[in-house]
Structures are given as C-alpha cells and as structure tokens.
Image (cartoon, rainbow, N blue to C red):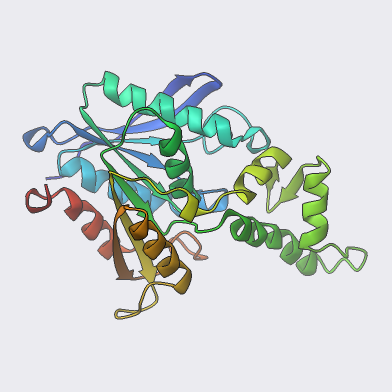
Length: 279
C-alpha cells in the first residue's frame, strides 16, 4: 500500500520556525510508532533528499508516522547556515519529538544519516526521554575527520580557481576558525562554534545502553566487511553493553555521489526492522 503525500508545515521551536514534512501512517497498519529523521550536513543533505523521501514513504506505508525536519539554518527552515548551532539543533530535535507525541504516537524511533546520526546519539545521551530504536545510516565516526574532509572542499575550490595567491591549507583554515572567524566552504558559511562542536565528537563516546541501535553501512560490493574503524567502534560498544546490530549492504554512497543516486536494498532492509517478524 502506498502512503499519502507528505504534509508540509512549519514547526515552532525555541529558535524560530522549522520546515517539516509529516508522513501519515497507512491506517490499516497503524501501530502507534513514529520515526524522527535527522538529516546529514550541508550538501550531503541535498544529495540524500531522495533516499530520505523514499524511506519515509516506505515507513509510512508500513504503518509508521514519519517526521522529517530541516534543522536551524538548513533547507527551508528559518535562519542561514551561518546561524546553525549544535545546541540549537538538539533543541530542534526535542521540539520535533514533542510534536510527534502530541499527535498521539506512543513509541518514537530516531533515524539519523551521517552527521545526523552523531547528532541523534548526542541528543539522546542527554535527553530524559528515551527513543525506542536508533537507526543509523552510514554514521560519521569521528567529527574531527569529518570536519577536515569538509574543509578540504575549500582547498579544492581554490585549486580549481587556479589562484596562485592562495596558499591556505586545512591547518590554516582551522586556525581561522579557532580565532573566531567564519569560513565560506562550498557555498556554506561555517561558524566557529559549530565547527568546534563537530570537532569534539567521537561516536565511540556516544554509546547508548539499554536501547537497540541498528547500524547500516554501505560497502562497495557484497561480501565486503565493515570498515576497520567501524569494527573498532562496534567492539567498543559491545563491551560497553550497547545492543548494536550492524547491517552491511552493497551500494553507492548516495550522500556523496555527483548525480542523485539510490540504494533500494537499504530501504528494504531498514523497513524490515518494523516487519511483524521483527516486532
């Protein structure tokens, strides 16, 4: 059964209005569960919109409500990207979760992509309310490495411009951030406070115990093992008592491909988490 079109609206938060898409659950299968989606960072968000929409529709068709929220300064929400702030983003999550509860949903699950997965975990370790399940799509493992990759986009743009007067490197860009200067990176104005927050994050320090974490990782081909860095985190979480389940799927890194791409196997596997046999 196909789900009805998503309902767009603006959600009032402590720091302004956030654009949201609400996918109503297919009524014959309604189960009182909802999923809150936390998108990825900067251009990865745009590259992933199609996959997020396809997965949201699949969840709704299976009887789950889904709320997609554009965080502060992102997408169609109020504010510029320069206004984006890690703590404000966590407040946005709290408001979105409360909105789902007000709609009558009993069990709230959270689904995060890339940096959004780190944000979901960071929020959950401080929140008093529990999420039932965590769905992590290709989670970022280390905020410092992720930020370094983002800063390298600026260096690439400088090389393309062939401006011989530009001699910046990642270290110099970081020094500018530490000095309190915002940076224009690939069309996004990165504020020093947000950069510092991302820099400090390590997924192995964001263990959530007593709840189930479903970790989905895209690999180049069937049969490939989880990345070495991912294995280290997985084992550390297991030792800490985290109930983490890793699912490896062959496909394209849709959040980073030049053309918009899909990974149907990921949608099937993620939706199957809520099949009757898994409930």
